Length: 339
Ligand SMILES: [Zn+2]
Ligand SMILES: [Zn+2]
Image 1: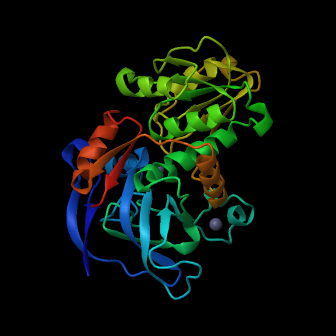
Image 2: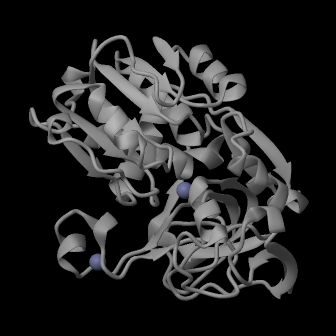
């Protein structure tokens, strides 16, 4: 059986429309994998980094896409607990080794041998995809397919970023959180933070869409990317891949506060004066997520409940969707819809 899939042969700027449509055999699930008929696949900034070559090439040609919502259409001989037709999600963390010090220590997100959907293995910009059953998520019924897609990366990563701010659950009431960049992850993150009782300060360059959405979702204050919020913040998350925002965010944070870098790629961070980080301020990155992050997040997203704002693109528009993401012209999260 054949399927239609978008493939990347060689990274290049999205303005060159680097994805090409191909007809490929439907993949056969290995013993521990599910075969999914893909319903939708979210579009994430990481896809942009893969397609444009900011991340190294691990597989060529490659089917990108790592926020896959689909129905089980087949499975390997060792899979248990799934039935044909079940709705599941496949996310960025595709597989880990299970035996390295990180996997054994509860930090599988740092696994040395980890595989990543739509980067080191084929992803979901296709009519079918495979993924290990142990790394797929059941999706809460409160979200339809399109609403669920951005939860699978933007949502889970945003959740882990919130965790790594160092604020404990009881600290959130009245806490002041800064968000730099307000795309797919930011718009989910603000909803969790607000539901936990925090004030959220949003710095983003796009007035028309991102700043407006931030206001709509209850931001206490909204400014331009480099504007200084009117009050010192307890913690901040930088989602924009712009290293020059690190000193900007440090300047806006109180002593002992943490700046979390949420992206997989960032432009170089300029040198800054020691006084900006003195006072026990912390800068730390977030790398991937554990499955526990994913499960906890999906529960919290359903109970909050998070409302994802999405812009649907038809399957044929994968290149256009990536161009729109690059131009910051998507309000909320972009999603490719297969049929
Ligand atoms: Zn490992
Ligand atoms: Zn992603």
